[in-house]
Image (cartoon, rainbow, N blue to C red; front, side, top):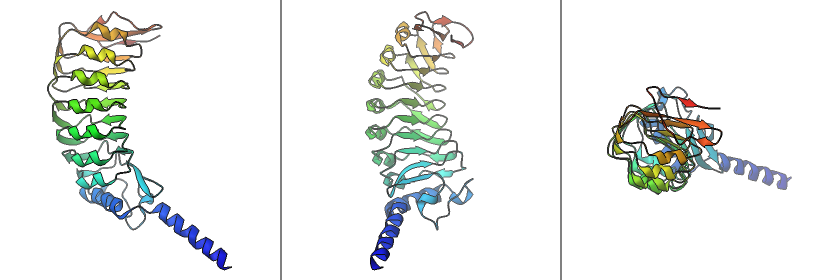
Length: 271
């Protein structure tokens, strides 16, 4: 009988340990809750319960590995304590009303694979410290109020597959070092204030499927070498200062046509 009781106690203890998280992680989540007016979220948290019961929080083996609070009416700033959730692999806080700067402490999240902060009100520069997130595959910061240059440091994120920085106030040029992002499939820089030439180095991104550079101040010619990108199916460069209205590519059975169209209307032709 004692053996059965001991087994049940051990099992119950294991379940609790599995459901609970460290004090540091719980405090970091509560800091996020407080800083973003958690009581007014569309779906709020019952903070009397364990974190694995909280909306948008994924807990595995007693560690917080994902937060998805997108479309949830978060108001306020992102607290520095977010950097204490060191086991996070994914953050999605998109489509909220967050403001202030993106905290540099996010650089502490060394396991992070996806960082989505799109459609908020973040301002300031993109932290160059994000370059330390060597496992990052998705960086979506579009539709904010970010300014300054595209940090060349983020071109060291060689596992990056999606880079979306559109609809901000970014200035400067597209860094030629971007050619190092060999896994990149989506590059969107639409609706910024970027200038200079479209770097020929983009033609080295052999896995690229979408290249969105419209609504900037880019000049010169569209590199014909982009025609070598066999996976490219979307190209948008309208509303720039290019020498011609290169705003379409043709995707035929053999891949991207080497002849880039000049037209007043964006069209992607498919089979």
